[in-house]
Length: 139
Image 1 (tube, rainbow, N blue to C red):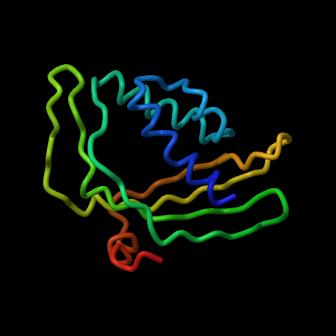
Image 2 (cartoon, rainbow, N blue to C red):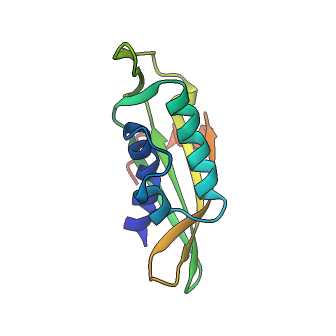
């Protein structure tokens, strides 16, 4: 379940780097309200001629099992080493880190009929104080 939740999370930047909000990976690991929300995010990024450069570190993962077919997963992300890259001129915008470089993700995952855990709901809080405080803990 945790591996599939991680793949659902990384399917979004993958779709951005592929310049395609309809990548099979995104639809495989996301469903419910998470899928159209992620597709809209990818489309807006692609429309702005932006892709990503650098890396994101995920940490402080917590899982709450609701029942045999549903769970909640939360994690923090450190985006201090991730940057936007202009697709047209291939220039990386290396902005200094801010509080918004730390994000708290809260998701709901559900086991589908094919046995795949899909993220069905996804919320994020940029600049989350808890994400900033726990960024050095690697829990």
